[in-house]
Length: 140
Length: 224
Image (tube, each protein chain N blue to C red):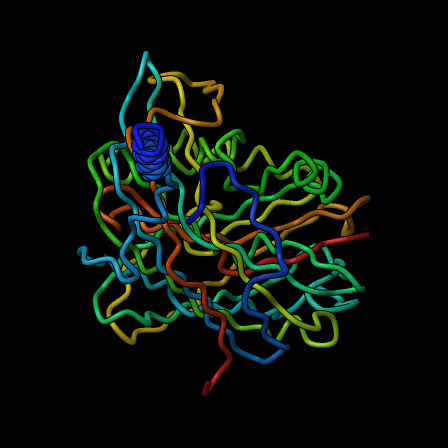
Protein backbone atom coordinates (compact mmCIF):
# COMPACT_ATOMS: atom_id res chain seq x y z
CA UNK A 1 0.00 0.00 0.00
CA UNK A 2 1.43 3.33 -1.00
CA UNK A 3 -0.17 6.47 0.29
CA UNK A 4 -0.09 9.49 -1.98
CA UNK A 5 3.03 11.57 -1.69
CA UNK A 6 4.78 8.77 0.12
CA UNK A 7 8.45 8.99 -0.69
CA UNK A 8 9.84 5.59 -1.63
CA UNK A 9 13.49 5.15 -0.79
CA UNK A 10 15.91 2.39 -1.70
CA UNK A 11 16.44 -0.18 0.97
CA UNK A 12 13.47 -2.49 1.12
CA UNK A 13 13.25 -3.21 -2.60
CA UNK A 14 14.79 -5.92 -4.76
CA UNK A 15 18.48 -5.40 -5.50
CA UNK A 16 20.32 -6.62 -8.57
CA UNK A 17 24.08 -6.64 -9.06
CA UNK A 18 25.39 -5.30 -12.34
CA UNK A 19 24.64 -7.28 -15.48
CA UNK A 20 24.44 -6.32 -19.14
CA UNK A 21 20.64 -6.46 -19.20
CA UNK A 22 17.97 -5.75 -16.64
CA UNK A 23 14.19 -5.93 -16.54
CA UNK A 24 12.28 -3.78 -14.10
CA UNK A 25 8.67 -4.57 -13.34
CA UNK A 26 5.91 -3.51 -11.01
CA UNK A 27 2.25 -4.28 -10.61
CA UNK A 28 0.05 -1.52 -9.22
CA UNK A 29 -3.60 -1.78 -8.31
CA UNK A 30 -5.56 1.47 -8.65
CA UNK A 31 -9.06 1.89 -7.28
CA UNK A 32 -11.13 5.04 -7.07
CA UNK A 33 -11.98 8.17 -8.98
CA UNK A 34 -9.58 10.65 -10.46
CA UNK A 35 -11.61 13.76 -11.00
CA UNK A 36 -11.49 17.46 -11.64
CA UNK A 37 -12.08 19.79 -8.75
CA UNK A 38 -12.49 23.58 -8.71
CA UNK A 39 -10.75 24.15 -12.01
CA UNK A 40 -8.01 21.64 -11.31
CA UNK A 41 -7.39 18.77 -13.68
CA UNK A 42 -6.24 15.77 -11.73
CA UNK A 43 -4.04 12.89 -12.80
CA UNK A 44 -2.20 10.05 -11.17
CA UNK A 45 1.36 8.95 -11.94
CA UNK A 46 2.24 5.33 -11.31
CA UNK A 47 5.35 3.42 -12.25
CA UNK A 48 8.81 2.68 -10.98
CA UNK A 49 12.13 4.35 -10.40
CA UNK A 50 15.55 2.78 -10.62
CA UNK A 51 18.44 3.75 -8.38
CA UNK A 52 22.09 3.07 -9.23
CA UNK A 53 24.58 2.32 -6.47
CA UNK A 54 27.77 4.10 -7.47
CA UNK A 55 30.59 5.80 -5.61
CA UNK A 56 29.20 4.46 -2.35
CA UNK A 57 25.66 5.82 -2.55
CA UNK A 58 22.27 5.34 -4.17
CA UNK A 59 21.61 7.75 -7.02
CA UNK A 60 18.36 7.96 -8.94
CA UNK A 61 18.73 7.30 -12.67
CA UNK A 62 16.35 9.45 -14.75
CA UNK A 63 17.08 7.31 -17.80
CA UNK A 64 15.70 4.19 -16.18
CA UNK A 65 12.39 5.37 -14.76
CA UNK A 66 9.01 4.61 -16.28
CA UNK A 67 5.87 6.54 -15.50
CA UNK A 68 2.26 5.97 -16.54
CA UNK A 69 -0.05 8.95 -16.24
CA UNK A 70 -3.71 8.16 -15.68
CA UNK A 71 -6.23 10.84 -16.53
CA UNK A 72 -9.67 11.53 -15.09
CA UNK A 73 -11.94 8.51 -14.72
CA UNK A 74 -13.16 5.76 -12.45
CA UNK A 75 -10.56 3.06 -11.83
CA UNK A 76 -10.54 -0.48 -10.60
CA UNK A 77 -7.64 -1.92 -12.52
CA UNK A 78 -4.23 -3.43 -12.08
CA UNK A 79 -1.37 -2.04 -14.16
CA UNK A 80 1.67 -4.17 -14.87
CA UNK A 81 4.50 -1.92 -16.00
CA UNK A 82 7.77 -3.41 -17.28
CA UNK A 83 10.83 -2.32 -19.20
CA UNK A 84 14.07 -3.99 -20.22
CA UNK A 85 17.27 -1.94 -20.14
CA UNK A 86 20.70 -2.38 -21.59
CA UNK A 87 23.21 -1.63 -18.84
CA UNK A 88 26.48 -2.09 -20.69
CA UNK A 89 27.24 1.65 -20.43
CA UNK A 90 27.10 1.30 -16.64
CA UNK A 91 29.95 -1.20 -16.58
CA UNK A 92 32.73 -0.23 -14.13
CA UNK A 93 30.55 2.45 -12.62
CA UNK A 94 27.35 0.99 -11.21
CA UNK A 95 27.77 -1.74 -8.61
CA UNK A 96 24.11 -2.64 -8.16
CA UNK A 97 20.57 -1.46 -8.84
CA UNK A 98 17.36 -1.23 -6.92
CA UNK A 99 13.76 -0.40 -7.81
CA UNK A 100 11.05 1.53 -5.99
CA UNK A 101 7.37 1.93 -6.79
CA UNK A 102 5.94 5.28 -7.75
CA UNK A 103 2.46 6.59 -7.00
CA UNK A 104 1.86 10.30 -6.96
CA UNK A 105 -1.23 12.33 -7.61
CA UNK A 106 -1.22 15.84 -8.95
CA UNK A 107 -3.53 18.49 -10.27
CA UNK A 108 -2.92 21.22 -12.82
CA UNK A 109 -4.96 24.27 -13.77
CA UNK A 110 -7.23 23.43 -16.66
CA UNK A 111 -6.21 25.19 -19.86
CA UNK A 112 -3.35 26.99 -18.19
CA UNK A 113 -0.10 27.32 -20.10
CA UNK A 114 1.81 27.91 -16.92
CA UNK A 115 0.26 25.20 -14.83
CA UNK A 116 1.14 25.72 -11.24
CA UNK A 117 0.88 22.23 -9.92
CA UNK A 118 -0.67 21.29 -6.62
CA UNK A 119 0.72 18.16 -5.07
CA UNK A 120 -2.37 16.20 -4.24
CA UNK A 121 -5.68 15.95 -5.97
CA UNK A 122 -9.32 15.20 -5.62
CA UNK A 123 -9.49 11.50 -5.19
CA UNK A 124 -12.48 9.86 -3.65
CA UNK A 125 -11.00 6.64 -2.31
CA UNK A 126 -7.27 7.24 -2.33
CA UNK A 127 -6.22 3.71 -2.91
CA UNK A 128 -3.12 2.65 -4.75
CA UNK A 129 -1.68 -0.72 -3.93
CA UNK A 130 1.72 -1.80 -5.20
CA UNK A 131 1.42 -5.55 -5.35
CA UNK A 132 4.96 -6.27 -6.42
CA UNK A 133 8.26 -4.85 -7.54
CA UNK A 134 10.72 -6.94 -9.49
CA UNK A 135 14.22 -6.43 -10.84
CA UNK A 136 15.86 -9.24 -12.72
CA UNK A 137 18.84 -9.85 -14.95
CA UNK A 138 19.13 -11.88 -18.12
CA UNK A 139 18.19 -15.54 -17.72
CA UNK A 140 16.79 -15.20 -14.19
CA UNK B 1 -28.78 -13.36 51.19
CA UNK B 2 -30.17 -10.23 49.53
CA UNK B 3 -26.70 -8.70 49.88
CA UNK B 4 -25.21 -11.67 47.95
CA UNK B 5 -27.81 -11.30 45.18
CA UNK B 6 -26.96 -7.58 45.03
CA UNK B 7 -23.24 -8.38 44.59
CA UNK B 8 -24.03 -10.89 41.86
CA UNK B 9 -26.17 -8.30 40.09
CA UNK B 10 -23.33 -5.78 40.42
CA UNK B 11 -20.76 -8.24 38.97
CA UNK B 12 -23.13 -9.10 36.13
CA UNK B 13 -23.65 -5.41 35.41
CA UNK B 14 -19.87 -4.77 35.33
CA UNK B 15 -19.39 -7.77 33.04
CA UNK B 16 -22.23 -6.57 30.80
CA UNK B 17 -20.83 -3.02 30.54
CA UNK B 18 -17.30 -4.37 29.89
CA UNK B 19 -18.61 -6.53 27.05
CA UNK B 20 -20.37 -3.54 25.50
CA UNK B 21 -17.19 -1.42 25.80
CA UNK B 22 -15.09 -4.18 24.16
CA UNK B 23 -17.62 -4.53 21.34
CA UNK B 24 -17.64 -0.77 20.83
CA UNK B 25 -13.83 -0.65 20.71
CA UNK B 26 -13.73 -3.46 18.13
CA UNK B 27 -16.33 -1.66 15.99
CA UNK B 28 -14.40 1.62 16.15
CA UNK B 29 -11.12 -0.08 15.25
CA UNK B 30 -12.81 -1.67 12.20
CA UNK B 31 -14.23 1.68 11.13
CA UNK B 32 -10.78 3.28 11.28
CA UNK B 33 -8.73 0.37 9.98
CA UNK B 34 -6.34 1.22 7.11
CA UNK B 35 -7.44 0.30 3.61
CA UNK B 36 -4.80 -2.40 3.44
CA UNK B 37 -6.88 -4.47 5.84
CA UNK B 38 -9.66 -4.92 3.30
CA UNK B 39 -7.45 -5.49 0.27
CA UNK B 40 -7.29 -8.92 -1.30
CA UNK B 41 -3.80 -10.34 -1.73
CA UNK B 42 -4.40 -10.72 -5.45
CA UNK B 43 -6.60 -8.07 -6.92
CA UNK B 44 -9.43 -9.65 -8.94
CA UNK B 45 -9.48 -6.80 -11.43
CA UNK B 46 -8.61 -6.41 -15.09
CA UNK B 47 -4.87 -6.14 -15.66
CA UNK B 48 -3.45 -3.69 -18.17
CA UNK B 49 0.06 -4.59 -19.32
CA UNK B 50 2.42 -1.81 -20.31
CA UNK B 51 5.67 -3.31 -21.56
CA UNK B 52 8.29 -0.80 -22.55
CA UNK B 53 10.68 -1.66 -25.39
CA UNK B 54 14.28 -2.79 -25.03
CA UNK B 55 16.52 0.23 -25.56
CA UNK B 56 20.22 0.85 -25.94
CA UNK B 57 22.17 4.03 -26.60
CA UNK B 58 25.42 3.52 -28.51
CA UNK B 59 28.15 6.07 -29.10
CA UNK B 60 29.29 6.08 -32.73
CA UNK B 61 31.69 9.01 -32.97
CA UNK B 62 32.66 12.43 -31.65
CA UNK B 63 32.78 11.58 -27.95
CA UNK B 64 35.48 10.57 -25.53
CA UNK B 65 34.13 8.29 -22.81
CA UNK B 66 35.52 9.12 -19.41
CA UNK B 67 33.52 6.61 -17.32
CA UNK B 68 30.25 4.80 -17.88
CA UNK B 69 27.98 7.08 -19.87
CA UNK B 70 30.00 10.18 -18.93
CA UNK B 71 31.38 11.69 -22.11
CA UNK B 72 32.99 14.82 -23.55
CA UNK B 73 33.05 16.19 -27.08
CA UNK B 74 36.20 15.52 -29.09
CA UNK B 75 34.86 17.23 -32.21
CA UNK B 76 32.12 19.68 -33.12
CA UNK B 77 29.82 16.87 -34.18
CA UNK B 78 29.03 13.60 -32.43
CA UNK B 79 26.78 10.74 -33.42
CA UNK B 80 24.95 8.26 -31.21
CA UNK B 81 22.45 5.57 -32.09
CA UNK B 82 19.37 4.70 -30.12
CA UNK B 83 18.39 1.08 -30.64
CA UNK B 84 14.74 0.26 -29.84
CA UNK B 85 13.22 -3.23 -29.97
CA UNK B 86 9.56 -4.01 -29.45
CA UNK B 87 9.22 -6.59 -26.66
CA UNK B 88 5.44 -6.53 -26.34
CA UNK B 89 3.30 -8.81 -28.52
CA UNK B 90 1.40 -5.87 -29.94
CA UNK B 91 2.48 -2.95 -32.10
CA UNK B 92 3.09 0.39 -30.42
CA UNK B 93 3.49 4.01 -31.45
CA UNK B 94 6.28 5.98 -29.78
CA UNK B 95 7.33 9.59 -29.59
CA UNK B 96 11.07 9.87 -29.06
CA UNK B 97 12.15 13.18 -27.59
CA UNK B 98 15.56 14.46 -26.60
CA UNK B 99 15.86 16.65 -23.53
CA UNK B 100 18.71 18.48 -21.86
CA UNK B 101 19.38 19.93 -18.41
CA UNK B 102 22.52 21.19 -16.62
CA UNK B 103 23.60 18.54 -14.13
CA UNK B 104 23.72 21.02 -11.24
CA UNK B 105 20.12 22.02 -11.93
CA UNK B 106 19.12 18.35 -12.04
CA UNK B 107 20.67 17.82 -8.59
CA UNK B 108 18.90 20.89 -7.17
CA UNK B 109 15.57 19.57 -8.42
CA UNK B 110 16.24 16.17 -6.86
CA UNK B 111 16.76 17.84 -3.49
CA UNK B 112 13.25 19.27 -3.91
CA UNK B 113 11.98 15.76 -4.69
CA UNK B 114 11.49 16.55 -8.38
CA UNK B 115 12.72 14.01 -10.88
CA UNK B 116 13.52 15.58 -14.24
CA UNK B 117 11.76 15.44 -16.71
CA UNK B 118 8.79 13.58 -15.22
CA UNK B 119 7.78 15.76 -12.32
CA UNK B 120 4.48 17.54 -12.83
CA UNK B 121 5.96 20.79 -11.52
CA UNK B 122 8.50 21.03 -14.35
CA UNK B 123 8.14 22.69 -17.73
CA UNK B 124 9.45 19.51 -19.34
CA UNK B 125 6.40 17.70 -18.05
CA UNK B 126 4.18 20.26 -19.78
CA UNK B 127 6.14 19.63 -22.97
CA UNK B 128 5.47 15.88 -22.62
CA UNK B 129 1.76 16.55 -22.12
CA UNK B 130 1.81 18.92 -25.11
CA UNK B 131 3.46 16.34 -27.36
CA UNK B 132 0.89 13.71 -26.38
CA UNK B 133 -1.93 16.13 -27.15
CA UNK B 134 -0.38 17.16 -30.48
CA UNK B 135 0.01 13.56 -31.65
CA UNK B 136 -3.41 12.45 -30.42
CA UNK B 137 -5.11 15.38 -32.10
CA UNK B 138 -2.85 15.51 -35.20
CA UNK B 139 -2.10 19.13 -34.37
CA UNK B 140 1.03 20.15 -36.30
CA UNK B 141 1.04 23.70 -34.90
CA UNK B 142 1.05 22.38 -31.35
CA UNK B 143 3.76 19.87 -32.23
CA UNK B 144 5.94 22.70 -33.59
CA UNK B 145 5.31 24.79 -30.47
CA UNK B 146 6.49 22.05 -28.11
CA UNK B 147 9.38 21.04 -30.38
CA UNK B 148 10.62 24.65 -30.20
CA UNK B 149 10.32 24.55 -26.41
CA UNK B 150 12.44 21.39 -26.28
CA UNK B 151 15.04 22.93 -28.59
CA UNK B 152 15.29 26.00 -26.37
CA UNK B 153 16.58 23.79 -23.55
CA UNK B 154 19.79 23.08 -25.46
CA UNK B 155 22.21 25.90 -24.70
CA UNK B 156 25.79 24.91 -25.53
CA UNK B 157 25.06 22.19 -28.05
CA UNK B 158 22.09 20.98 -30.00
CA UNK B 159 20.79 17.47 -30.45
CA UNK B 160 18.43 16.20 -33.10
CA UNK B 161 17.23 13.04 -34.76
CA UNK B 162 18.88 12.71 -38.17
CA UNK B 163 15.60 11.94 -39.94
CA UNK B 164 13.66 14.97 -38.68
CA UNK B 165 16.42 17.43 -37.74
CA UNK B 166 14.46 18.12 -34.57
CA UNK B 167 14.59 16.57 -31.07
CA UNK B 168 11.36 14.70 -31.88
CA UNK B 169 10.74 11.50 -33.82
CA UNK B 170 7.48 9.57 -34.18
CA UNK B 171 7.55 5.89 -35.07
CA UNK B 172 5.60 2.65 -34.74
CA UNK B 173 7.11 -0.77 -33.99
CA UNK B 174 5.63 -4.18 -34.72
CA UNK B 175 6.22 -7.09 -32.30
CA UNK B 176 9.89 -8.12 -32.41
CA UNK B 177 10.84 -5.25 -34.71
CA UNK B 178 14.03 -3.33 -33.97
CA UNK B 179 15.14 0.02 -35.32
CA UNK B 180 18.22 2.20 -35.07
CA UNK B 181 17.66 5.92 -34.71
CA UNK B 182 20.70 8.10 -35.46
CA UNK B 183 21.02 11.13 -33.19
CA UNK B 184 23.33 14.00 -34.06
CA UNK B 185 24.88 16.31 -31.46
CA UNK B 186 26.56 19.52 -32.48
CA UNK B 187 28.66 21.78 -30.25
CA UNK B 188 29.80 24.91 -32.18
CA UNK B 189 32.95 25.23 -30.06
CA UNK B 190 33.59 21.49 -29.86
CA UNK B 191 33.19 21.47 -26.08
CA UNK B 192 30.87 22.46 -23.23
CA UNK B 193 31.65 24.54 -20.15
CA UNK B 194 29.73 22.42 -17.64
CA UNK B 195 28.10 19.00 -17.35
CA UNK B 196 24.71 18.40 -18.92
CA UNK B 197 22.31 15.49 -18.87
CA UNK B 198 21.14 14.52 -22.32
CA UNK B 199 18.18 12.17 -22.18
CA UNK B 200 16.42 10.14 -24.85
CA UNK B 201 12.88 9.51 -23.63
CA UNK B 202 10.00 7.57 -25.13
CA UNK B 203 6.31 8.37 -24.82
CA UNK B 204 3.49 6.01 -25.73
CA UNK B 205 0.78 8.58 -26.55
CA UNK B 206 -1.98 6.00 -27.07
CA UNK B 207 -1.21 3.55 -24.28
CA UNK B 208 -2.79 3.02 -21.90
CA UNK B 209 -6.08 4.24 -23.33
CA UNK B 210 -6.80 6.18 -20.13
CA UNK B 211 -3.57 8.17 -20.30
CA UNK B 212 -0.04 7.80 -21.62
CA UNK B 213 3.31 6.51 -20.47
CA UNK B 214 6.78 8.00 -20.56
CA UNK B 215 10.17 6.59 -19.70
CA UNK B 216 13.87 6.77 -20.26
CA UNK B 217 15.48 5.04 -23.22
CA UNK B 218 19.04 6.09 -22.50
CA UNK B 219 21.16 9.11 -21.80
CA UNK B 220 24.56 10.67 -21.46
CA UNK B 221 26.33 12.93 -19.00
CA UNK B 222 28.09 15.38 -21.33
CA UNK B 223 30.88 17.24 -19.56
CA UNK B 224 33.78 19.61 -20.37
